[in-house]
Length: 517
Ligand SMILES: [Zn+2]
Image (cartoon, rainbow, N blue to C red; front, side, top):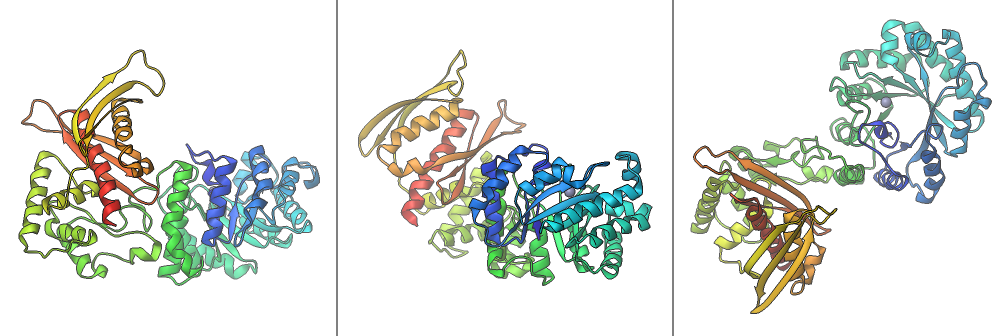
């Protein structure tokens, strides 16, 4: 398993890693038990050289660090090639050397003679093996090259093998190959070369993961990909999908078994550092990978998870979610009340009351599928287990002009807690931010635990209501306190009021949850 999030992944649009970011990702991949990390191109990027110098401080336990570069330039020796020298300077145990294996690229793109390209491959690989480096030869455009001129594509692999490459990596650089073709070619190469073969796929046809799995089943012994699928254009094979596919479904060993449960947190950590979501629908690690909405589905997994789950979410460290909606009604209510430690029976009057209240709220425009925090509060209120933590006297929100960065609005709030009145004001970036700050400032005096809470997401949706003159809005607020995140919802014709309702739920949920747990 070779992860190239830090090299190929860093070439994705919108992704930029600092040296600190790279060190954190390297450490997470190492903890997970990934055996190789290709971490940058020191010849092209001075930041990468700094990274390699500092990488020693990570103290890798499992992963072998690889620097990436290309075969020497035309017309010079490897020892004169600056890129090759900076690869040595990176001081890694191994290097990945990319070389051309499609004759069209050799003659028409880099304007080299086919034989010269073979010499460039052989001499560059030889140079690094003589320096004691493990060399992975990355045969660029291998599958396109093999389709056009198989003899030449094979000759490039032979040049690398003869020069001592430890692994021949076949790249579907343009991402245009299909599994059937990949399988046939991998079988041919693995039977005609003694050197281990790796696979490196791009996702331009949506086939990268399938191509990678079929390549392994056809004889490839190493996989290259990026953990969350980041990469040029449509991305690379996604290791967070490929690893469990190979290990849980096909019995190949990719990472230590006990680390499989860290798969989801590793994917989330990398997405957080990259500031690029993993996608709710991502296999195994996505938020929706084990979320059940339809009544029969929710009911089915409650009876036996095998009814609608291909693996147990625990196996990859993800969570099952029963989404709340009028479609799943009682099942989701019962599942939630059990989680809250307040088990109810299907036919009890309390269950009936909660279901009716949810229907009423859904009719008003509420949706609880994503709003687990507000959902818990509805249940507690219906069961009489709720007491308000404060009383609002009033609030006022003002927009401010001229706009000053981070302070475009201010809010004034008056609340009463245990008979004591608290008045606070705060400035914020927009009215909701100002209101949130003012409310928190007032309540932190009484409930210091609220200092742990911060808002992580804010979404507004305008509800299309044909009968109404003014549209309602639904606001979803996601909050986190370092150990858990929860979402709350508010609906109103006024966006500030809808936000206020969601904010209050967020705070009450935090206070209740800390009491309940
Ligand atoms: Zn690539």
